[in-house]
Length: 230
Image 1 (cartoon, helix red, strand yellow):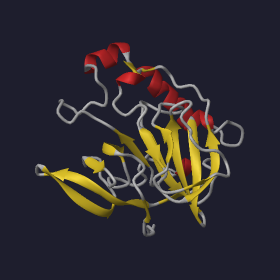
Image 2 (image 1 turned 180 degrees about the horizontal axis):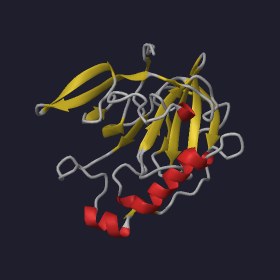
Image 3 (image 1 turned 45 degrees about the vertical axis):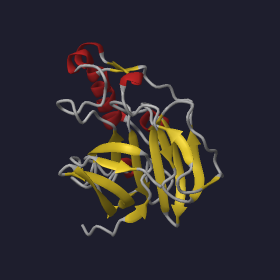
Image 4 (image 1 turned 90 degrees about the vertical axis):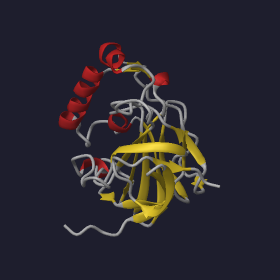
């Protein structure tokens, strides 16, 4: 199919990030077109100096045996910012986060949601957790998903400006580990929306020992990216 030109938005996070799931590497990025995820991104923070670039402070063995407390993930609780000027059309909070990640139960949970979620009768929060949807333009909606419980800073009908603080990175809903899931869609209904391609108007990529500016870019799953607006 012909891919439309990406819509340009501001990067919704600050500091250094990695996108392990990105349309810059494959489309559909999440392996499905369901829930508007065709061009969706996941963003995490990692330790670039440790082998394997883990997203948590404990050892891999500790992760396998005991799981990891949310506070031991680098990105948990990091601020999330509005990627566009817009109007809040949905804002859901209050969904409990599991206190620790656990590889086996998280895989089981993801499998159940992938195969048995019914968008006609099941609550979208089972998939999205705490989330918000912003109307950025005609038939363009931004979804920011899996937010930290109690962190949603906006209400339905509120006008936001690009760069406004709107929430924090969490581990709610269908989430393997704390991360920000971000996507653009053609409607405000996650259950039925089609994904829209998007690129980020400005960020930096670390290559050959230095940071290089990127304009209107789509990061790959290997890119060490940074956004620090002046």
